Amino acid sequence: MNAISSIRLFVDDQPVDVPAGASVAAAIATLGISFRRSVSGQWRAPLCGMGVCFECRVRIDGIAQQRACMCPVHDGMRVSTHE
Amino acid sequence: MNEYYDVLVVGAGPAGLAAAQAATSHGARVGLIDAQATAGGQVWRHDVRHAAPSLARRSIGGALTHSRVDWLARTQVVAVETGSLFVEDPRRGSRLDYGALVLATGARELLLPFPGWTLPGVTGAGGLQALAKQGWPLAGRRVLIAGSGPLLLAAAATAKRHGATVLGIYEQAGADAVRRFAGSLWRWPAKAIQAALLRGQLAGVPYRCGSVVRRALGDSTLRTVELEGPHGIEQVPCDQLAIGYGLLPNVELAQLLGCELRWEGAHPQVSTDIWQQTNIDTVYAAGEVCGIGGRDSARVEGAIAGHAAAGARSAAMALQPRRRHARAFAEALRTRFALDARVYALATPDTLICRCEDVALSDMDGYTDTRSAKLATRCGMGACQGRICGAALAELGRFSGGGQRPPLFPARLSTLGDTDFFPLATIEE
Image 1 (cartoon, rainbow over the protein chains, first blue to last red):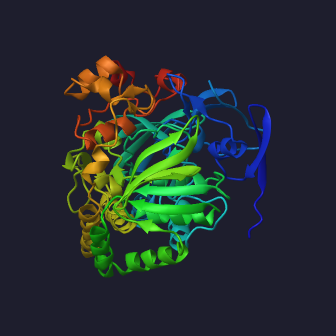
Image 2 (image 1 turned 60 degrees about the vertical axis):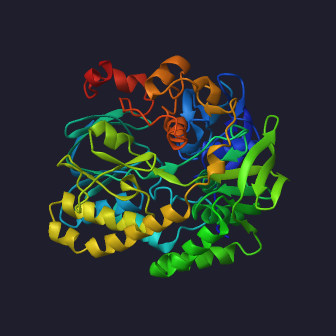
Image 3 (image 1 turned 90 degrees about the horizontal axis):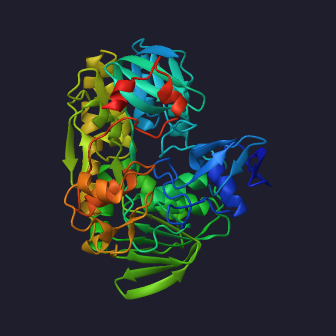
């Protein structure tokens, strides 16, 4: 088992620790928070995992409409869902 | 920023990495771009908890550490002009000029609509694999794998390695077809070894042929999957459903450049000659974008494209027999995992087809072409730009995909507004 360093970030102001190199999507899923609501109000979460479907869009460090599956985490990152 | 590369490679999977390495061996200065943060593409995607296979490590290391290769991660193509790509990374937009361009844009999953497919907890099969490798929590979670093709085995193995309880793999193809596919693997010994390894890793995981997922059930998240197999209908409680019906080429950039496409079934792929050269002299294409063939054909075509793009046709010529052998595998894949009629009948009138704009199947009744359906329903006009619903509708035989216009992906206004490098004219028309 390799020692994997961990990163602390905040999703909707809740702290979460994930392995270095993990995606924002993984951090959100670790907390069990849902990602976003669709235009008709349905809950949505990642589908494709590779940046194609745009179902995982969240606000990251103040920038809206970021694909959570494409963004690696960094220490102190602030993510907000449901926008 | 404005850079010139003798050879510019789009996509850092097996094809792109091989192209970059081949081109540098002739002294070319190479730019290698990828939308992802790490190189490897989907098949060699970086795993935060497990070491990469040695071939992946060698291929990635060999290309990225070369002094004549500029590795540009998290860089996405927004628009094109003759001899230039306009790209965006998390910080800024730039123009990259090239002598030759190699398109190694790979493939994405074919995701087909069925009732409940929009529920959180439902992902692609390769989708779940990608998420797991990036740290998505699977430990102790009940995962059901379904859809079609050998990718299901790889997805199941990844899920298991990350601690999931894999309830079963449900393949839509019949047992005879799967058996005939397995029986033909001796022609590709590396594939046969890979299959044997996967079978070992998946000991104890049920593999059921002739089975389709009819519905995913749950309120705000997935709770149960309804399956139809040779012995009838059953409901299986689970936490994640990973379901994919195979792969399709990412041709959008090629299309925007004006490359000639040909159709394989419902989906386009890039047409090339034996040098991997497209109808545009300076543009080459290699790997999955030229038709789904897997990692081995991607590697050899990438190398051919890299040599040819650097002007070294004799090196490219020597690889032709390997290319033909690897490509024959694609044919076996396609014929053995052809989709069953049941798969096409899963979506009901109220099943959402366009997930970005929440457009149901019945909303599109009466429209016979993409353009009128888009104008009337907004289908395909959301953030994914029709990448998911467009492919699904083409596969279901409703409409074929439309053309491409810039921006190729949603881009920041600051990128689009910087007229120093961005061709506004291409947006306005």
